[in-house]
Length: 202
Image (cartoon, rainbow, N blue to C red; front, side, top):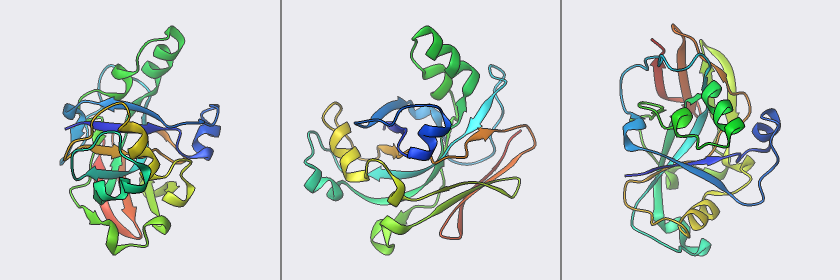
Protein backbone atom coordinates (compact mmCIF):
# COMPACT_ATOMS: atom_id res chain seq x y z
CA UNK A 1 0.00 0.00 0.00
CA UNK A 2 1.26 3.44 -1.00
CA UNK A 3 0.28 6.88 0.21
CA UNK A 4 0.41 9.27 -2.74
CA UNK A 5 0.18 12.94 -1.82
CA UNK A 6 -0.61 15.76 -4.21
CA UNK A 7 1.03 19.13 -3.68
CA UNK A 8 -0.37 22.56 -4.54
CA UNK A 9 -3.78 21.42 -5.78
CA UNK A 10 -5.56 24.54 -4.50
CA UNK A 11 -4.62 27.93 -5.90
CA UNK A 12 -5.20 29.66 -2.56
CA UNK A 13 -2.81 27.27 -0.78
CA UNK A 14 -0.11 27.78 -3.43
CA UNK A 15 -0.50 31.52 -2.89
CA UNK A 16 -0.17 31.29 0.90
CA UNK A 17 3.00 29.21 0.44
CA UNK A 18 4.43 31.76 -2.02
CA UNK A 19 4.61 29.01 -4.65
CA UNK A 20 3.81 29.13 -8.35
CA UNK A 21 0.70 27.39 -9.64
CA UNK A 22 1.68 24.02 -11.12
CA UNK A 23 1.13 23.29 -14.80
CA UNK A 24 0.99 19.56 -14.09
CA UNK A 25 0.32 17.61 -10.87
CA UNK A 26 3.01 17.47 -8.20
CA UNK A 27 3.14 14.32 -6.11
CA UNK A 28 5.27 12.68 -3.44
CA UNK A 29 4.98 9.49 -1.40
CA UNK A 30 4.64 8.63 2.27
CA UNK A 31 5.42 5.11 3.57
CA UNK A 32 2.67 2.96 5.04
CA UNK A 33 4.18 3.58 8.51
CA UNK A 34 2.99 7.20 8.16
CA UNK A 35 -0.61 6.06 8.62
CA UNK A 36 -2.34 6.78 11.93
CA UNK A 37 -5.65 4.91 11.82
CA UNK A 38 -6.71 5.45 15.44
CA UNK A 39 -5.63 7.16 18.62
CA UNK A 40 -3.98 10.50 19.24
CA UNK A 41 -0.90 12.04 17.66
CA UNK A 42 2.32 12.48 19.64
CA UNK A 43 4.36 15.54 18.72
CA UNK A 44 7.76 14.34 17.42
CA UNK A 45 10.92 15.63 19.06
CA UNK A 46 12.71 16.41 15.77
CA UNK A 47 10.57 19.43 14.86
CA UNK A 48 9.50 22.66 16.49
CA UNK A 49 7.15 23.73 13.69
CA UNK A 50 4.61 21.00 12.92
CA UNK A 51 1.77 22.03 10.58
CA UNK A 52 -1.60 20.45 9.78
CA UNK A 53 -2.85 20.04 6.21
CA UNK A 54 -6.34 18.54 5.99
CA UNK A 55 -7.13 16.72 2.75
CA UNK A 56 -9.73 14.70 0.90
CA UNK A 57 -8.44 11.12 0.53
CA UNK A 58 -9.37 8.64 -2.22
CA UNK A 59 -8.89 4.85 -1.95
CA UNK A 60 -7.78 3.05 -5.12
CA UNK A 61 -9.99 0.02 -5.91
CA UNK A 62 -7.91 -1.92 -8.42
CA UNK A 63 -4.55 -2.22 -10.13
CA UNK A 64 -3.87 0.20 -12.96
CA UNK A 65 -1.06 1.70 -14.99
CA UNK A 66 -1.15 4.26 -17.83
CA UNK A 67 -4.81 4.86 -16.99
CA UNK A 68 -6.75 6.89 -19.53
CA UNK A 69 -8.45 9.92 -17.88
CA UNK A 70 -11.76 8.78 -19.39
CA UNK A 71 -11.59 5.55 -17.38
CA UNK A 72 -9.98 6.86 -14.19
CA UNK A 73 -13.35 7.10 -12.41
CA UNK A 74 -13.52 3.29 -12.47
CA UNK A 75 -10.49 3.04 -10.19
CA UNK A 76 -12.05 4.48 -7.04
CA UNK A 77 -15.39 4.49 -5.24
CA UNK A 78 -14.64 5.56 -1.66
CA UNK A 79 -13.27 8.65 0.01
CA UNK A 80 -12.60 10.08 3.46
CA UNK A 81 -10.54 12.79 5.18
CA UNK A 82 -6.96 12.72 6.41
CA UNK A 83 -4.20 15.01 7.61
CA UNK A 84 -0.81 15.47 5.98
CA UNK A 85 1.33 16.55 8.93
CA UNK A 86 4.39 18.49 7.82
CA UNK A 87 7.50 19.38 9.83
CA UNK A 88 7.76 22.81 8.25
CA UNK A 89 11.20 23.60 9.67
CA UNK A 90 12.63 20.36 8.26
CA UNK A 91 10.89 20.99 4.96
CA UNK A 92 12.41 24.46 4.70
CA UNK A 93 15.87 23.03 5.39
CA UNK A 94 15.36 20.42 2.70
CA UNK A 95 14.22 23.07 0.22
CA UNK A 96 17.23 25.25 0.93
CA UNK A 97 19.63 22.35 0.49
CA UNK A 98 17.84 20.85 -2.52
CA UNK A 99 17.17 17.65 -0.55
CA UNK A 100 14.19 15.26 -0.62
CA UNK A 101 11.32 16.03 1.75
CA UNK A 102 10.86 12.58 3.33
CA UNK A 103 12.06 13.64 6.82
CA UNK A 104 9.49 16.46 6.80
CA UNK A 105 6.58 14.56 5.26
CA UNK A 106 7.06 10.81 5.65
CA UNK A 107 7.74 10.34 9.35
CA UNK A 108 5.76 7.84 11.45
CA UNK A 109 2.07 8.74 11.93
CA UNK A 110 2.33 11.83 9.70
CA UNK A 111 -0.85 10.73 7.89
CA UNK A 112 -3.80 10.40 10.29
CA UNK A 113 -6.76 8.90 8.45
CA UNK A 114 -10.45 8.75 9.29
CA UNK A 115 -11.77 5.21 9.93
CA UNK A 116 -15.02 6.18 8.18
CA UNK A 117 -15.17 5.66 4.41
CA UNK A 118 -17.91 7.20 2.26
CA UNK A 119 -19.20 6.12 -1.13
CA UNK A 120 -18.64 8.60 -3.95
CA UNK A 121 -22.00 7.69 -5.52
CA UNK A 122 -23.88 8.73 -2.39
CA UNK A 123 -22.81 12.37 -2.77
CA UNK A 124 -22.86 15.22 -5.23
CA UNK A 125 -19.14 14.65 -5.16
CA UNK A 126 -17.95 17.74 -7.00
CA UNK A 127 -19.80 19.94 -4.50
CA UNK A 128 -18.96 18.23 -1.21
CA UNK A 129 -17.22 20.42 1.35
CA UNK A 130 -14.90 19.53 4.17
CA UNK A 131 -14.00 21.70 7.13
CA UNK A 132 -11.08 21.45 9.53
CA UNK A 133 -11.14 22.80 13.08
CA UNK A 134 -8.33 23.42 15.55
CA UNK A 135 -9.64 23.81 19.10
CA UNK A 136 -13.09 24.44 17.55
CA UNK A 137 -11.75 27.32 15.44
CA UNK A 138 -12.39 26.84 11.73
CA UNK A 139 -9.05 26.76 9.90
CA UNK A 140 -9.67 25.19 6.48
CA UNK A 141 -12.50 24.72 3.99
CA UNK A 142 -11.97 22.54 0.91
CA UNK A 143 -13.95 21.10 -1.99
CA UNK A 144 -13.17 19.24 -5.23
CA UNK A 145 -14.71 22.12 -7.15
CA UNK A 146 -11.65 24.18 -6.14
CA UNK A 147 -9.05 21.62 -7.24
CA UNK A 148 -6.55 22.72 -9.87
CA UNK A 149 -6.39 19.10 -11.05
CA UNK A 150 -9.46 16.90 -10.65
CA UNK A 151 -9.20 13.37 -9.24
CA UNK A 152 -9.48 11.58 -12.60
CA UNK A 153 -6.65 13.70 -13.97
CA UNK A 154 -4.53 12.99 -10.87
CA UNK A 155 -5.04 9.23 -11.16
CA UNK A 156 -4.21 9.27 -14.87
CA UNK A 157 -1.09 11.37 -14.30
CA UNK A 158 0.34 9.43 -11.36
CA UNK A 159 -0.30 6.10 -13.12
CA UNK A 160 2.04 7.15 -15.93
CA UNK A 161 4.93 6.79 -13.51
CA UNK A 162 3.93 4.26 -10.86
CA UNK A 163 1.47 1.39 -10.89
CA UNK A 164 -1.56 2.00 -8.69
CA UNK A 165 -2.62 -0.95 -6.55
CA UNK A 166 -5.73 -1.89 -4.62
CA UNK A 167 -5.74 -0.06 -1.28
CA UNK A 168 -3.40 2.75 -2.31
CA UNK A 169 -4.38 6.11 -0.85
CA UNK A 170 -4.43 9.37 -2.76
CA UNK A 171 -4.23 12.51 -0.61
CA UNK A 172 -5.60 15.11 -3.01
CA UNK A 173 -4.02 18.32 -1.67
CA UNK A 174 -4.83 20.86 1.02
CA UNK A 175 -6.67 24.19 0.83
CA UNK A 176 -5.44 27.45 2.32
CA UNK A 177 -5.33 27.89 6.09
CA UNK A 178 -2.56 25.47 7.06
CA UNK A 179 -0.84 26.27 10.32
CA UNK A 180 1.08 25.01 13.35
CA UNK A 181 -0.18 22.69 16.06
CA UNK A 182 0.82 22.56 19.71
CA UNK A 183 0.65 19.90 22.38
CA UNK A 184 -2.84 20.03 23.86
CA UNK A 185 -4.60 20.95 20.62
CA UNK A 186 -7.81 19.20 19.62
CA UNK A 187 -8.24 18.67 15.87
CA UNK A 188 -11.45 17.79 14.04
CA UNK A 189 -12.34 17.29 10.37
CA UNK A 190 -15.87 17.07 9.01
CA UNK A 191 -17.47 16.41 5.64
CA UNK A 192 -20.82 18.06 4.88
CA UNK A 193 -21.30 18.49 8.62
CA UNK A 194 -20.42 14.89 9.56
CA UNK A 195 -17.37 14.50 11.79
CA UNK A 196 -14.99 11.98 10.24
CA UNK A 197 -11.73 12.53 12.12
CA UNK A 198 -10.88 13.69 15.64
CA UNK A 199 -7.58 13.55 17.47
CA UNK A 200 -5.56 15.26 20.18
CA UNK A 201 -1.96 16.44 19.98
CA UNK A 202 0.02 15.01 22.87
